[in-house]
Length: 423
Ligand code: EPU
Image (cartoon, rainbow, N blue to C red; front, side):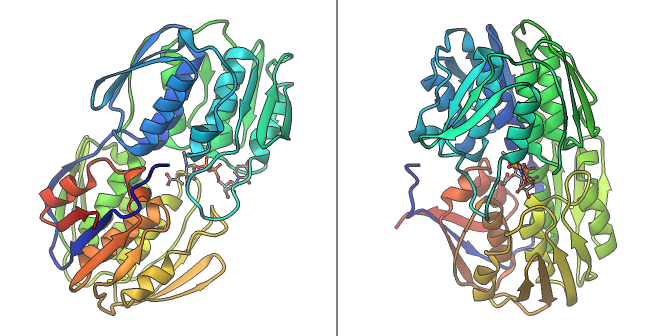
């Protein structure tokens, strides 16, 4: 990916984070809304787009397909996909991110055909696409995997009904993209309900689509012939907001997290209250204040509105600072505890058995050289380092740069001792 594999964060822990932090636009909404613009033969202006690596990659992919992409400022992008002229995505860049699977739905929705290489992205076990394929087939598309790419033939595309066997964010959005311009009515049952699903639907509806029920587990889409341009603002990043909530609690700090939708953070807020962390919600901000020892807890990650899997590593990092035994069960991904060996290098006492991690908290962490094994594991490592005695070097921070805008600046403003080096 052209990553600078030498770049690392050097963090000296032990400082309580204090102050305010502004949350950026949601990565997982932006990486779906940008390819959704392929469906629109007109100019769209998308605001509150986070300036992160995954967004730059998906914008490059759109340019490489022939769309006009112009950055109006760091967080605003103008896309005109009228000139987009191919349904074949290049292997070299499309395989660099997981969300490139959205090109399947978007290109098929526009051209009735798509050829896209298998998705890349975070490595935490097998990441199947069988539910995406089930959805395309329900829309009368043929899907084949050959010559190292996924081929969708949607010559006969029309609305259809699909019941997903697994709640999948990616499959729900992908089929939404394929269905908005397909003739007839599509019904998705057991759809994912994450805030970014609602955001993608709101974006498309504001451009003339007819999508109802996003945010519930039944989504109904009536195909429209064409979409029109317009201006749309991406929702705040619930996972970035949650990450700063965890950083505040783990360092026993006092942080006001601004530009958030508190409702999207309820799963975290309720766990914090159980732990004895003070949480005060405003209209679009949350203040998190933690002191002294906190209560141990058990938590299981689940699809929204459950506790988000992407905040599982930050939660584990926090629980290493809490006396007693806490249990974290991963309910979304099969294999998302590889990073635990890195936390153990810092002195964490954690036993992993399959999808369950048992954390014996309260053993002080000490600085060490650790790797960021994926994006959210990297965030967990940064939080652990902020609590540890001494200095930690977090390697492979290119994972973290995929999803956190200005993380060094934001943490430094909160009083953290963190810098980026590449020696
Ligand atoms: N699954 C299937 N078949 C499919 C698709 C998914 O079995 O066809 C399973 C997966 O193996 C997993 C579960 O369903 O066990 C959920 O996967 P989902 O499809 O919901 O995940 P995704 O769309 O690939 C998005 C986020 C992830 C986040 C998950 C779960 C994006 C770009 N990525 O992935 O975010 O962990 O939803 O909430 O939206 C991240 O931001 O770091 C990240 C990995």
